[in-house]
Structures are given as C-alpha cells and as structure tokens.
Image (tube, rainbow, N blue to C red):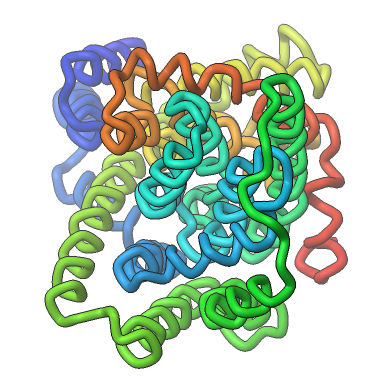
Length: 426
C-alpha cells in the first residue's frame, strides 16, 4: 500500500492527468501485485460511473454553459447593479450579489468566474477600481458557486458518500449566506479604508426594470429547489429541468441562443463531462483498492489513537483539505478522499451532510491557489495579469473565506437546520 500511494504521488507530480495517475497506480497493485483479473478491474471502474445521481453532472454543466452563452449573465449583472450599486464600493457588492444569483444556476466556481467575471472585472476597471481589487473580489465570490445549490461537487460527494443530494443542496443555503455576509462586510471595510464612492444612484424604476428583465433567469433556482422540495423531481431531473428552462430562455424568450452557440456549448459540456467521469472511474478503482486492503480503516484507527476530540479532528481534516485543494481539483479530491475520511467522521459522530459542505468549501478555497487553482488561471487570463499578481490580489480575500470556513466547521447547525426543516434529515 505504501507502494500504491507512492506511485500515485510520483505519477501525479510528473504532470500527467489525475485520471492516469489514479488508474496507473491502482493497476500497479491490482494487476501486478494482487493478481486480480482484468475483468474485475474494468468492472470496478465501470461500476464507479454507473450511477443514477451522476446523470445530474452533464446536465448541471450544460445548464451553466447555456446560461453563459445565452446572454443571461448580462441581465443578472444589471439587476445586481440596480440592487447594490448605490452602496459605497458598490460594484464590489454587485460582484458578490451577482455571484449569489448565478450560483443558483451554474453549480461550479469556474463557470461563475468565466461567465460573470469577464463582465464584472471590466466594469470595475471602468469605474476606477484597481485591477487587483477587482480580481480579488471576483475570485472570492466565485467560491459561492458550488456552495449555494445546485452544486456539482455536492452531486459527486453525495454519490461517493451515499448521502442525500437533496439534503446537501438544502444544507448549502445558510453557509452560502454566511459567506456572502462576510465578503460584503469585508468590502464595507475596504470601502471605508480606501474611501470608495458609490457607483450608481438608487432608482426604484431602474430596479423594477432590471428585475423584470432578470426575472426568468431568477426563477431557475426556484424551479430546481422548489421541484426537489415538493417532490416533483429528483436532483437529476432537476438538472434536466434547469437545462430545458435555460434553452427556452436563450432560444425562445431572448433569441440569443443560435444553433452555432448550442453546438459549441454541447461540445464544451461533453468535454467537461468526459473529464469528470474519467476521474470518477479512476477514483472508484483507487478507492476500492484502499477499502479492500483496509487502508481506510487503518488510517482511521491511527488518527483515533492520536486523538478522539471531534474538533481537533476537524481541524486536522481542514488543514489536510486546504493543502490538497491546492494540488487537486475538487472532483478528484472528493473522489479520492471521501473513502478515506468517511470512516473517521463516522466514528467521531460528524454528520456526513455537514462534512460534505465543509469539505466543498475547503476545496473551493483551493481553487484560488497555485499551483493548480483553476479559478486563479481563469481570472489571470481575463484580467491579463501574471499568476503572481493574481495570487497576491486574492490573498486578502482569504480572510472572509477562512472566517466562513471556521463558522461552518464549528457551527454544524448552519448546515443541518434547513435540511431538517425540509424533512430531508432526522
């Protein structure tokens, strides 16, 4: 097993894709050491992706891509400007509110950064905000994407941990609100410190007009969560409903979704989905090897002999996830670590829904860091800044994000109260 883990780390550090690192290191053990027949190995990999909840993955990705391509992000941004542009540091508040709204549609941080980020950074630069401040607030607000439902990482975690995806979706609302409040408080502090002004006078007429223009996109979260709450459809069917709604908005209502755009969106979705499923298949084999060799149980026992204090264990896991998040993208990290960490949290009485939200928030923070933070690279390309400057611009925004992580970790009711009220948890 030491050979297995060592081989995985070496292959990963060489720079090969995560799927290849997972599969090759697993095959080294299963085929050459344990002598497990090839058809068993293939069956385990195929079984990892043969899951009904995973059907939600391509549809949530498609829904986010459709929202970006159909011009819906502009309407969301205009409504956010009318809502918060009158505040000091207004466009920074707008940036955060726009991400809150878009989070209810896309489910990924990268879609948020790439879709709204292009509009937000240019608008803030035009109003005299520094590029560094604009990039920092855009990066921080993008982390809301997978916390406020729907959420692609929640779908993967729910499948890997055998946890209700609906409960995870409901559990993300209040932590998302806490993150929003902390980020807006930080903007208020920066606005007072640097004497930022207001970017737009408040107008009820403009607010009403932009609200009516953005109302159809704003109904997307209501369709998804309302349908799930009332039992009209499952999370997978909710993802399909979101796609159908996005296509209706782009093709019929706004008439901005052409066949050429639809083809490009479809190809991008297929490419992204294929990457996700390859990682899940490789991670399923890797996780199966870890479980059958009892490495997960050994790791749990080793940690519990050191301490049984729940809060100390949460601290150690948080540190581990923050480090891992800098080197692995969230889907891969969830697929690899969930089999290892679930026995530990079960033995110390941590609710898996609470842990899922905490784990996702940790990994979202990792998206902002080198060497492999995807949001970092997206925003560096959009803002035309170097990776080093982009990283330094993001560092101050770790303050509200880490404060949110502490709150979510130490106050599990922030995550669990709403799923209990909705009847999704006992």
